[in-house]
Image 1 (cartoon, one colour):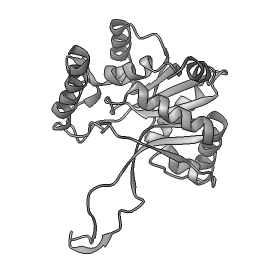
Image 2 (tube, helix red, strand yellow; image 1 turned 30 degrees about the vertical axis):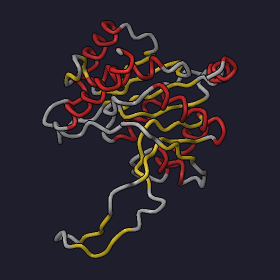
Image 3 (cartoon, rainbow, N blue to C red; image 1 turned 120 degrees about the vertical axis):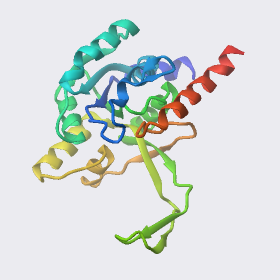
Image 4 (spheres, helix red, strand yellow; image 1 turned 60 degrees about the horizontal axis):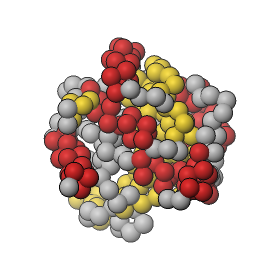
Length: 242
């Protein structure tokens, strides 16, 4: 990437909200503090945003009983972009709204990212921001490759689902600040539940451009995901080592 484009990204004033307030019920333990390649999962996630030159500030939204542990990680890893560590809410959208309420006045763009996606890279973040700067809203996504079936409550297949033009949504999802704030005001005014920020923006009738992901960025959901994520991290380091 040329110097001119870096200068452009520096002017965008991007704050990242890392959503880390889940209860990890499917894991049986707090996945964000599980060790992966010798480092807590959440540290890998924060590091990607630290390394992304386009990111100015990071807000971590987490359960209050984890704040001291996160502060320790920030000190030990010497992270410089953390601006706030704040309590989350009952639902994911409540945690995102809490992050929006803590934005600094300089913020022009907002990235929302699941802290349980530690394989995100600085390059992915920068690609999504570039498209957001063009369209006002952008999100990382991956085309559905598996065959999809619809089933009834007894898990009996009823029909097939055409996967053409279907995408699995990922994060980061990046928006113009005014747009995501307006979208969240509408969500709460209508007492809605949304599973991601694109869903909130869609309700305003705004288009969101997808940025196709060609690298691993899966969410740590089950214990089996940890060794796979660790393997990916090790493989990424091999070319640099050689």
